[in-house]
Length: 424
Length: 130
Image (cartoon, rainbow over all chains, first blue to last red; front, side, top):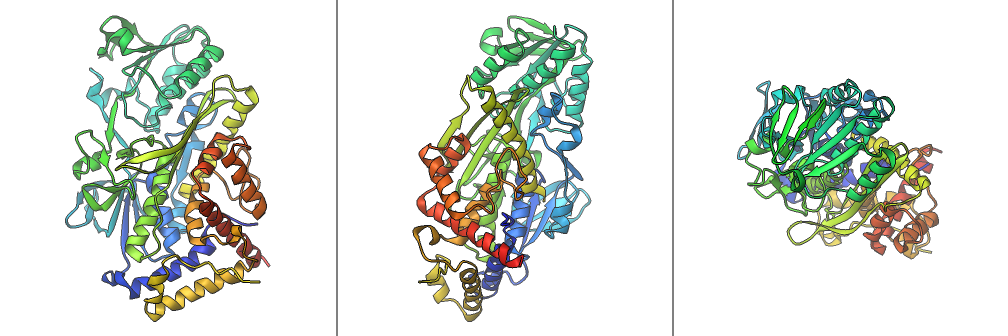
């Protein structure tokens, strides 16, 4: 049985590249080069794994990630809806360390010395790099929602970085009184996982429907349209009739203030009182990217579409949600795809292995109700200074139940295989 | 009958390279050639190393396990089935929009590279399992 393990092939190719390292233009690196990867999510774990796996030991790979166990944000909505248990979202770093020889360090990066090409950890340790792969995910602009703050995330969870926040949101939703009101404040563009808030609404409705069928769900949205809008809205009508109300800012007026003591939301034209609330603030690149001055005025990291290299620093690649990948959405699939382009580019730069043109892909699956899965996706290539789609698709309204079930089952297989592609 | 001997594309670099590079490249070519000894056809002239790079995309969704459900495994597929499936997705004859989109982005050379890589892996795996 053949495998996609790449190991047999990589051993052969890596031996060629390693020899080239000694002899050819790469002689500058007398010692084994080091790649430091910051962030162990879909971008960072994949980049570390592919650089280690495909270089066959020719590159030292150091992965720095504070969490000892990674709980994926993707698929956490399915936990909210009762379609997965929380532990099924957890993944460890053992195989990366033991099977791939990656130096996995559970710590925070507190500083990046770009001229000196080193990172400093909260422990005080300093690690030099030849290339740095930065995949720190998102950070929140809490004050984008007037009255909201990091401290008040325990009252109205954002639940947008997985972890205990998601568990808290589920507990608060289940504790709602009969006929109570759930309010979501949706984020402005751009943000992690464009269909995510609306899949979440579907899953909250699915959670409430059997036990609290008269509950209401209100979405206060600064946007005038959203990802897979027709699919979600028709799905809400079919599965949860009368339960979900989407209110864009053009209808209610902008959100003016939030009173977290009373869970009251004041817009220009109307006030809403919630029994449970989910506030997803505006987002920017992870904090360390700001500290290293790798962001532009948008708060995200501009990159070269051929290699995901920062436009501010050729020695740093930014992968995943923090990057400005133009048409590519901020998703786990995108980050995983970008990481493979980076791995190829980094190995070429440090060992002389062959470099291939960047190819990117993404698909985002969403669950609207039981066995009712939909998806949107595209393939991408570097275009005129940015990543551009070459072909794309989206599920159609009115698809039959069998196809929707297949799409859901496809998403389950994708989750299993993507997380294996990150962590196995 | 000619043996297929996939070579790295940068042949000019190789001919100018010092002996250690040539030696290791010869090892690679010999290994690949042994593993992939086949009549040369348009489908067997792919760039194996490029195929390995492209195949990393497949690994985002397809597992190594034949027991996988939801997304069918592709490892171990017969070469003809693999090529026919990709061509059918590309033409729209087979109906999965994710695969149609990915196939649409693949040139004939890309498909040949993927075929060459999976064929290499399949034969090598068989060899190792003897």
